[in-house]
Length: 248
Image 1 (cartoon, rainbow, N blue to C red):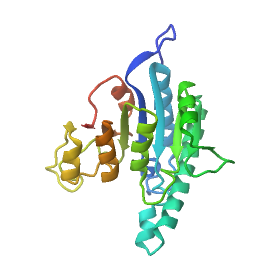
Image 2 (image 1 turned 60 degrees about the vertical axis):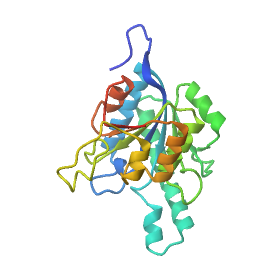
Image 3 (image 1 turned 120 degrees about the horizontal axis):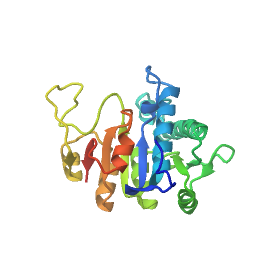
Image 4 (image 1 turned 45 degrees about the horizontal axis):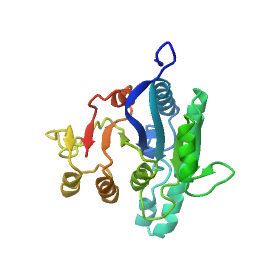
């Protein structure tokens, strides 16, 4: 689907969003590498909503399909070293997303907090805002650029810096929101339609890490947790429909 016949775009429920993707969401069924079908699905959906709605989209991507810093630290590796390896993995995913988006005609830029001038632009807030103003999707890789911080925290930080109206946290593996318990382990678990930041923290719910949740609470940035791989969910959210769980 595309915009209206006269070329006008529709107002979106949120004018500017940060889409948070885990590396695992992009992985092959083995949990490693990149699944071209998933990349194509995401690219087509984002191209569709960009052609339909007045919306700015930034993407913060993880790297867990290649490397997770916490895994290295758990094996005795220096935590900072392991985290820097994880940041590099996020750039790999960012480049893959850029390729998929450009193949469907969506202009985009990869910006990274870990400078790699031969493959991506350095993250500069004003330059990122300029790209968004030009209608480009901005892929934000490299986390915060610092060890000991997750890409969840990077998403919260970038949402505040870029004055985003919401963070859309895309899940995978069939999980479609925030539950009272792990729905894969507890068949009695029920999904919240809405939950307060403080309740997420107090109940130890696995939404985002506590630093990210606290940051979003302090800056009043709503988070929507939804199933990324169920086609049409991004469009539904931008239409203002209730999808997944709203944290706020």
